[in-house]
Length: 130
Image (cartoon, rainbow, N blue to C red):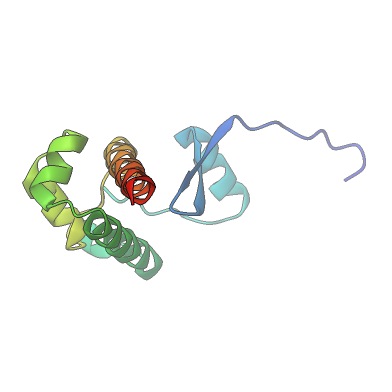
């Protein structure tokens, strides 16, 4: 690698449920794929043609979302209201029928985190009173 200049890549990292994801410009991603001789498949091309690993991530997301929602005692309708999304959308996500975009995932994470925080505050207040 002597003599080769390293190029910096602008990206953002985000952690959702303990899994780190990287967000970068699509053109950068395409360039990396080209260098690695990998042909990415766009999710918009065909929902049924997604790679098996992607389906697993979608199922994993759905499972974690349902588990966290139930742990806070929220209904689908209440979580959807708090996240500012349609209940039908949340239902499809939780059943693994659709993959939410980053904006929707963020809304859901913020809403669930707030509900969990409120639940912890309530539990600690109840423990202090006893």
